[in-house]
Image 1 (cartoon, rainbow, N blue to C red):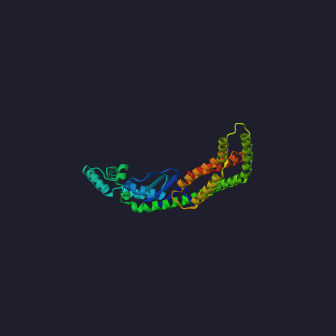
Image 2 (cartoon, helix red, strand yellow; image 1 turned 30 degrees about the vertical axis):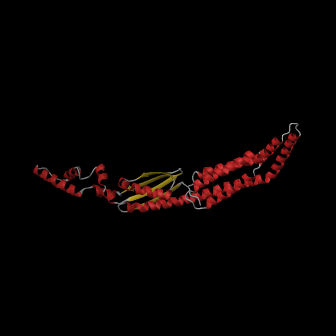
Image 3 (tube, one colour; image 1 turned 90 degrees about the vertical axis):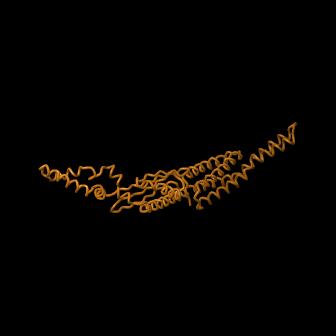
Length: 299
């Protein structure tokens, strides 16, 4: 069954030390267009992540984002340097005592404001001990889970698209059957016109046998659509088989088949020289355009 390029997958993990959410979103594209948004500590693993996504998804405009946060308690514990605070407090208290000043709560507050006791936001990002210690293998299952969810999403969407596309193919087949049903009347009408035209030629005083043969060959080649009908029926049958066959490049194959189907439909319309057949051809073209539109989203 077909796979859609539109998809969504998410994986979430929450522990005492961190919370991580990985999201994958994709829409249709001719090639793989992958955009990553990763925490700074995972940038060294970007190539590995890209390769894993490319191997699994093949095509589409894909956005991957991984949000990583730590609980407030963990951040506070990581940002407060207790040793530096105690050392600064004792030093300030000693200075206050040497100057004969009282050492109390104000001394503690002054120690908290000293550099290195509570790092700035930039210093905290540079240190970030909990994040730096977290290796990619611990978060890698999130990517596998999100990819599996996206593949399931793509399969579900592909199943719906397959049903819709096969409905359009069935309509084209019905219109081709209507062409077959109408063709005897068309041929009889052509025969009558050809007989009248040839009678006019043979009765002309400047009748030419060579011109006569050319006219006959012209009408035979111009108006006979038997081969086109057979080829169109064969293309439709192969198209239906290709929809049901598991193929990673089904979208491209079906696109080529749609071109061949369109070529036969156009030839039938140009050679039939019949209003009823041309109306049916217009209907087949409409259904084929619907198929092509849906194939743009097939993997």
